[in-house]
Image 1 (tube, one colour):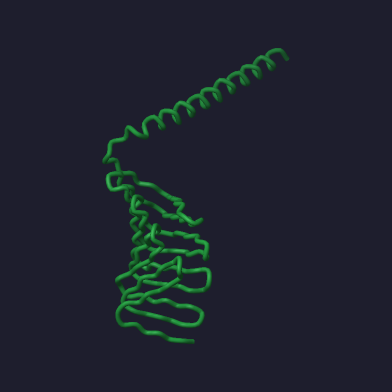
Image 2 (cartoon, rainbow, N blue to C red):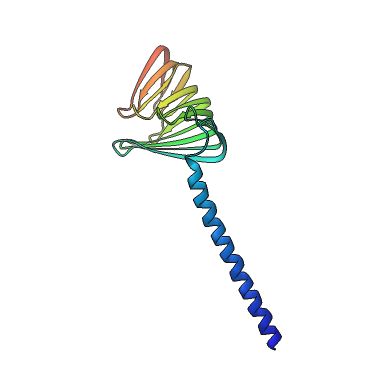
Length: 181
């Protein structure tokens, strides 16, 4: 009976020592990682999986960018994104954005979307193009390649566009086709 109590007590002390060591080790590692953050060389590039970036703007605007994987280039402050999904929230509504790839410039707060770029608003409108650029600071979405914009009441296609998201104003340039339903 005394032997069983002795071994149970030894096991409990051992678990206490191991958990304390793990706790101390994780705190030491977290403090060490924080102190290294500003000491990384300027040209360090990072490969990230399941990236989520959040940006806040003026007038209760926000943007959340998600990517399955990303490459970060510290010298240019640019993320190269794969399988991009983004959501832009404004006072007037929201926009869901998807693209195969993209480049996000954190300093300029601009995202270049490439490959089957698609923007859907909360009112049933869908804007599709092979490439487009979202300037989060200016609330402007632009494209210099063919596009198609479908709403519940009309379809519009053309060569290039400038879409002012705050005013919900679409300026189309070049030859366009409009089909009313």
